[in-house]
Length: 371
Image 1 (cartoon, rainbow, N blue to C red):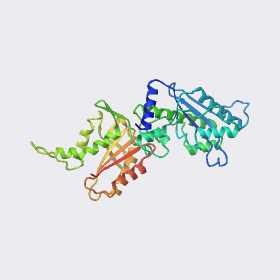
Image 2: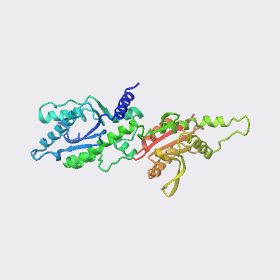
Image 3: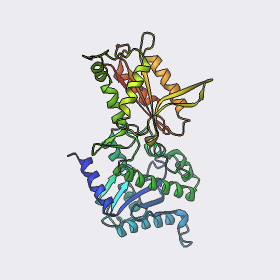
Image 4: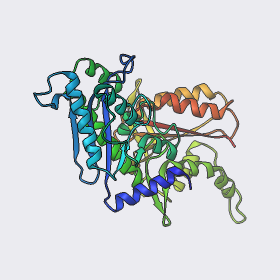
């Protein structure tokens, strides 16, 4: 069993037993300006999954006796280490805080730079990089660039206080510690809840939208949608051979949609046909299938003479723009049936389209069936 799976098992057990899981995040000076010193720390936030409490503190929280920015920052760092010590034995969840320039090591270096002494507490032994765990579970492309923001948007999390990295660097330069603290607290909450949804099998990523229960097992919804498409041609062949009676033929795209829906409803209770989406570029369109429970929209495309690689790509760009306004879709799955071999480089086209059209608001999965 791989390390990621063992870690997930351990965290799932901790959640079931209501053990201590705490996420931690912090905001710091831009690495561009911190050229000759460890990046300065503005604020730190913790979120306790056990109690639901979020704790955040910044330089603006320092008592009046701390008059200089250096004294205020040391106060923040001392509170950070006091929390680590008070929560000894907890699982600490973080987002990429394992790099020398950002993370537990970087905070220790900053503390020693300011005080001349080593930190009073060592980094926690039980540390889990939630970003790394998601990547190990679903692949490195599990969310578009800016993955913390993307995973929050894909799962409809509260982002009212969230600020992206560039904006946080500007806030640091303007000493807007309160706004930075609220953004950091928001991210600590998102990290904790991402882990909780992952453990519960409910996380939505660019390659996953949650689990489907079937025959006593749990199957990933996106993987299942893709697998059904993979079996389509075998089912067609089987239905084309009928010893008694007329074989069933599949002559056009509507026949294929009819079969695909019949396969879908074996696993999904609520499959809706041809949902209208708002107009785009002067025309209305429909989603072939919508699975509301998982916020999945499914579009079936069939290549033919005159519909080649570029045409499929152009259509999907338009589809993404249309579906991004549909409240019930944050994961679009495009199944392209190329049984006639019209596409020149299917695998490269899959990857290029997934990367180019996915957005933080909506993941796009493209699968081409050419065999």
